[in-house]
Amino acid sequence: MSDVVDTPRAPSYFSTYFEEQIRREEEGALGGIKTLYIDRDPDTTHYVKLYADAQFYSLPRLISQLFESDISTSIGGQHFQIPRDAFSGPGNSSNLFTLGFSGFLGTREDPFPGLESRGLVRPPPVPPQSVPNRSPEIFADLLQLSRGYPLTIKDANHRAQLLGDCKYYGFKGLMHKIFAHDISYNAERDSSEIVMRLEDLHKSGISFYGDASPSDQSPLGGWVYYSRPFVDETRYEAIVEINNQETKVDFRSMRATFYGNTKARISSLFQTVADKMNLPSNLPLGLMMSAGGASAAPASPANTPLSEDRVKIYIGTDAHIVLDGQDYIMDFHTSGSQTEGDEALTPGSLIGSNWPIPRRSPQIQQQFPPSKKRKRGGSLDEFGEWIIKRGQWRMRVQPKAEYQQPQMKGRTQEQGGMEIVLWAVKLDALSGQRGRNMGRGWVNST
Image 1: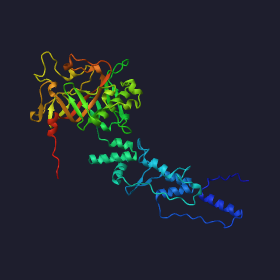
Image 2: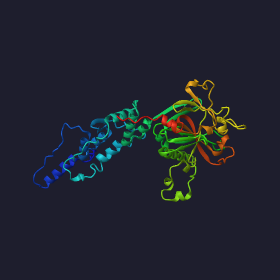
Image 3: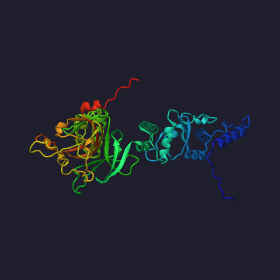
């Protein structure tokens, strides 16, 4: 006696159909066994039609093969075969195609969403997956970048198109690669740096790195670092770039005032740093308990634990400054700039002893030709106010008492708590309204 046992197979549409026909014939039903017609164009190779057929006829092996094969889609009228693993990297896997595919074509349990499949006599018409309102050229660039090839970004408009389509498709990892940035190693500071625009920073990439201190003491201060989410495996000292002429610097108080969207973004950045440091909120309890909570407070650095409304700054001699289109040297040692008995306004006097000051080597400290440099004497009070067209700043977090300026003698000094000081790296500034008007162009009347 054979001990071979037939293994039952899962019924497909074909076996179920003919079993039902045979049963009805055995029961004496009239009409005999009906012919099964497969209404499909034999030349059609479109992916979704084949997948719909496999779902309708209950062919699990074909379904699995199709689900693991390339995704066939149309972008802006152009056909693309997308490798299944092309957008499988960190931040890219949950995208329009992978999420939309399962919802668009259904699952084994619900092969045709919105339809009762039991009564269907043929696979329902399923339109091919397509994205008609997006650029095929931009998608081809994204596909190339996802495969690890370098991508040359032509201009700001090209970058904006790439970022816009990354958001549309859900390619978060690619988006952080495309954001404008510059990564370099600063040998003098012995650290790697990343320059990012303020509007491109994301909360998950921000961190605080404290100064080295004895193991039994908490750091007295530190720097803000950044790593691009889904992209960087290490963190870099952050240099934030702020544009849009929404920054005004007051040299009398050594503080910066921000306006518009820049003020809202700076406030959000400072609050994120405070959250990473586990600092308590400084908002009144009544506001925290009101409808909306902290989100109902107006956007202001003063509503974070790390600043007042006007943000404290430091501009040292190592900052590269362009004022009204001319290179400018910050000089705190001019002979008439101090009254008798005042200390010289040097970087060391503007900050506390715990502030790590980058020292420039004698080779680097040479001056440019006087004809290309504009040096202004006088005290900080005489500098007045500058409008910053573009600025790059490091972010220093420190105890409030650490930053004391000699010209603030006799005034109330903040005590306790932590604060952020923006350390100028590179500034393109205008000396008030006249400097701004110098840069105005004429409206083109043609």
